[in-house]
Image (cartoon, rainbow, N blue to C red; front, side, top):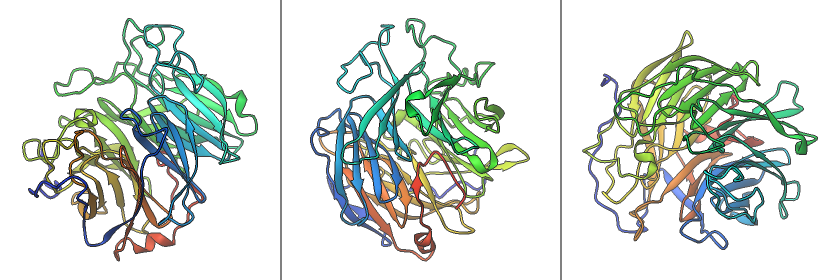
Length: 439
């Protein structure tokens, strides 16, 4: 159903030459750190980002990289750790780093090879590293989870002595001994911060007792678990992007989250991720139409598919207000769809920076839920000869925007705009985008 307050219609723009950088006048690229060995192969895609102090952590399908970003214009590589396992989405807490592995390996070590989901002996799940010495991260623990770990979310316990890891996974099949249907659940790992080797699964709550959304015609994949979960601990609230469903959860009991409301959307093919506003009164859900592999930022797809949907939380329910999609057409070779982003911390405003694969990075304002509008952007031309690439994640951290480009490396950008300048005064000790704290 079309809404009265839909975002600005897409407008055509010229096809860019490869490496041709285009930005709004208020956005500047400060630095780019290209991929280097052992992360230069076609399969070594950069994935998610996390931050802590003067350091940025970049996941890669072949491992992860730690950067010193004390001078954001000159990021310096501190260490690279080879540890293959798709997607290697990353998060950090204290002296610990967590990686999600959602492909079958023939063992849990960093020297493991490809495995088969049909083999009960194969492994996938969460890996934990000690990063006390950032020049020499140390692999200390692996926890196998049903259907692997596509993404994960860190959730602090209420005592401060442990952290929970909410593991999102999906894709069950009758022939997979460790991932049989119905799945419809998440895995919850408890990690004692002073004894991380004691980490273990403490519960596997079923979120969709009725199976979830399995019948909608245009679904990329029906609900069989969640793709991503974002938590807002101060309100004991979580938002789940769960393939065919968007959900809110009560996480008062960290080990037994309960779904409190569920929504579907006829224009959504794959509920991919969620972002709260700073007061926990809105949620941005993203639709990863085409699974991130397709060119969806064009006139034929239009502004309501492969987009963000803005929901206000009213009396515990999710009420849709509008869609947002980047107001630029991309070429037929550029995979482009809504992907990972975070808030820009401006008091009294709801402003977000977000990755759109080869659609680049968009900075947009959703303070008025019904009338979202872009206020800045950065993008490159088509990546040749490949047709898959671009920005996987774009996050704002301590005055700068950091983008994990799948093939081109780590980008650092700055936005100079009166609407976002106050955010530079907000200094965070850490940022894991799926664990949101009020600024």
